[in-house]
Length: 356
Ligand SMILES: *[C@@H]1O[C@H](CO)[C@@H](O)[C@H](O)[C@H]1NC(C)=O
Ligand SMILES: *[C@@H]1O[C@H](CO)[C@@H](O)[C@H](O)[C@H]1NC(C)=O
Ligand SMILES: *[C@@H]1O[C@H](CO)[C@@H](O)[C@H](O)[C@H]1NC(C)=O
Ligand SMILES: *[C@@H]1O[C@H](CO)[C@@H](O)[C@H](O)[C@H]1NC(C)=O
Image (cartoon, rainbow, N blue to C red; front, side, top):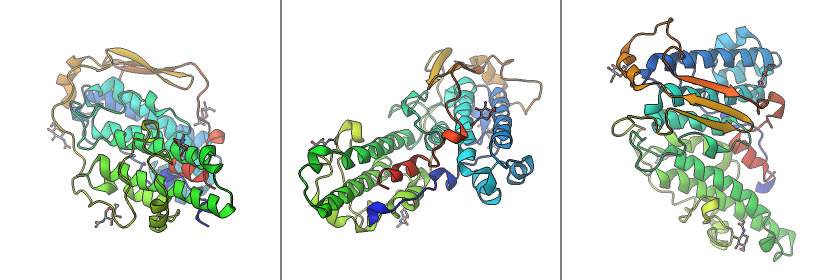
C-alpha cells in the first residue's frame, strides 16, 4: 500500500549540496561588494563545518573529511559512521553561516540564483526552520539582480504544500464523512496525489522556462513522487477536488490552482539559471540588521560600498571580514541544531514520514 511506504533517507543525502569550493554556489566572488571579505568569511565557515563534523559526529575523523573534501554524499558513502544526520546538522549551521557571509559581504547579490541556492540548503538541512526568517527570502518577482527563476518562490510553495499534506491527511471535516477503511485509504492517497501534483505545479509552473532538474525536480522524483506512486495518481486526482475539498488552493497551502496529472506534465524548460539585470547598489535591509534563527540572533553589518573597488584583488590573507567593515555575529540562545535533535530526515524525508 502506497501509504505505508516510508523512506528515511534525507533529500540532503542525495542532492548536490556539497559545494566544497571556496565560495559555495558563488563561483565568481568578484561580483560581491566585498569579495575578499566574502571569501574570508566562507573560509571561516568551512573550518567551523570541518570542526563540527570531526568533533560532533561519532566516528568523525579529519582524514575522512579530508578524503572527501567535505563533500556530503562522499562522506555519507565513505564514512558512514559519521551518520548522515550529524553531517546534515553541521551542514545546517554551515548554510546559515553562509547566509550571513552573503548578507554582510555580498549584499548586492542577495536576490541572485546563488544566494537563493544557499537559502535552499538552509531549508533542506535545517529541521523545523522557519524559512520566512531567512533574510531577503523570497525575493520579490521583479527583484533587481534577481535570478532567471525565483527559486525561493518555488521552495516556499513546496514547504506550504508539504504542510498541507499533513492538514489534508488529518482533516476531520473530510474524514468524518468516510466510513470504511477503504474509503479512508483512498482519501489519504488522494491527499498524497494532490500534494505530488502541487509539487509538480510548483516546479514546472513557477519557472516554466528553467530546466526542471536545476530546481530540484530529480530529487523530488526520487524522494517523493517515485516512492509514493505518483504514476498511479490519475484516478485519485479524478475522484477528488484538490483545490477546494482538499485545501491545496489556499494561499497558506501553496496557492496551487493547476493540478497536473502524471501523464500530462508540462514541457520541460530548457534554460539554465542565470542572474538578470544589474546588482543592487545599496543594502536592502540597511547597513546593519538582525535576523533570528530560533533563539539565535544573527547580527549583520553590511560591507561599505567602497570595497567594491578592491573587489577584483586576489585572495589576500591579510584581509579579514572585520577589517573590510563587514561582519556577521551570532548572539544568544543555545544553538538550535544538534546532531541528536536532527530527526534523521531532511525536508522531503520529513514530508514522507507524515504518511508513514
Ligand atoms: C569573474 O567576473 C569578473 C567580472 O565580470 C571577470 O572579469 C572574471 O573573468 C570572472 N572570473 C571568472 C573566473 O569567471
Ligand atoms: C523533464 O525533466 C524531468 C525532471 O528533470 C526529467 O525526469 C524528464 O526526463 C524530462 N523530460 C524530457 C522529455 O526531457
Ligand atoms: C478541510 O476540508 C474542508 C472540506 O472539504 C475544506 O473546506 C477545508 O479547507 C479543509 N481544511 C484544510 C486545513 O485543508
Ligand atoms: C557541535 O559541538 C559543539 C561543541 O560541543 C556545539 O557547540 C555545537 O552546537 C555542535 N553542533 C552541532 C551541529 O551539533
